[in-house]
Length: 108
Length: 115
Image 1 (cartoon, each protein chain N blue to C red):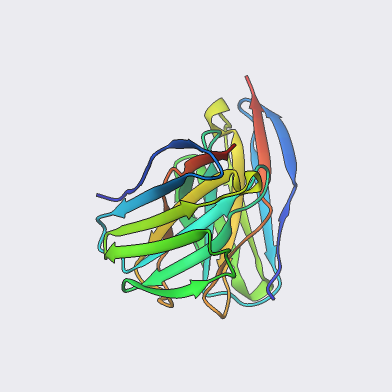
Image 2 (cartoon, each protein chain N blue to C red; image 1 turned 60 degrees about the horizontal axis):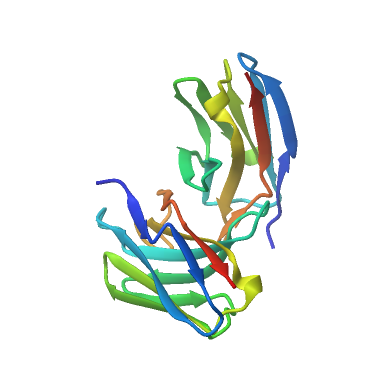
């Protein structure tokens, strides 16, 4: 089945720093989303981005479908950005497959 | 309304208890999902309902019984659970199962502890 790999697995940054999270996937996908799971467990939809580039405030994402990767950029990090960032894709069987996540900790 | 609402937020139950988790959405989505998430792991798919019919059961034990009374509601009935079933249970919805071009919206989850 399709493999979804996220890197880095863990990231510790000082408040104000910028970061890039990466998601590689092993096969073509119909759907790709980035989620932020906050410390209370809520999965917040950041971007639906099967291809192209989108921006929302300090966050932006780029998916290069032909090269099977997606990047999530976080600029001017804030402590509220802490949590786990998941990349999720939908495979040919229409099942959503999550990566293992990047655990981000922003220090004040 | 762009939310998926789950109740209760927390649940502690004994192994002989029967309880239910509830999920509700009013976005007109026709596909609804149950996921189970253990600590420090990604969510794992349990069930998919499409147009109120069960489309996928990911070999989930029968002590978990899903129900979709209408297009806005999804329940998960729990009976004779084991301590290893303790986890965060997440509900999600989307425009439609096997419909490309749309994302998923997740609820805030029910944190279940089986004692």
